[in-house]
Image (cartoon, rainbow, N blue to C red):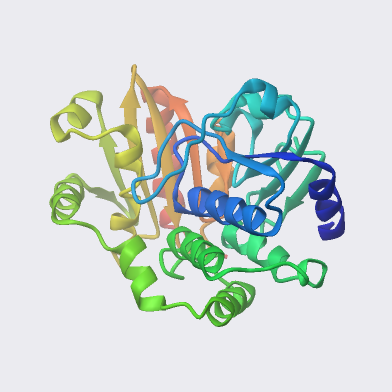
Length: 313
């Protein structure tokens, strides 16, 4: 498949790069890594990074005419379903390559490089760049740094349940190849400022626990009072996951009377099936769903509470 991707790159003068709505670190750093890699190795090609939403640490949103997209090879990164792309014009591209680490629910690409066992999209990109097929191409320090940052942010510095030997091997190769300063990278992408620390404290204080299930429900008025968006609320879900006694945890945030829900769990508690039942999806231990009404949210949380008290398989 790597050879097929290289062949497609060689045939297009215009390449567009997309990621999912409300990008996290993996989506944004993967986009930056791919853009930098292509610009360094194929200077004769025009590379555009599309998208409207921003990531709080670093972002790139180029102005991309529709005509450019229509004539381009499009890479869509870290986006499981086409309706989550942060620019639906991606589907108008001449050819689409999907690179993702979520379960294959929507194989919208002409080429689908998908590995649900990978801990991050950045890990899949790194594996491709380090492959024999790509060995003649330059892998710069900056590209390695972006890829390592993507892995670190999506695994919370290698703490998530989907981290395995392949993840650690690829990370070590990036450190060696790019001569990376690991501590500095982790500090840059993981440390928060004092305002965020104060906000996180307020969020943690709203935690409710039933059995071994912890959850926070933000009504619209709560978000307004805290001065945060749905995305900012969701991004604090890992603050709850540090509690030893919790097996499953969740944040739900309301907009226009409906709730977006993010769920996490410890190894053995498979929660993506629950989210799928409500129109969402994701990984075994990290999943989400959108636009649940109050009754659906109540029923879902009852299910997760019961599941949290069960002995994991």
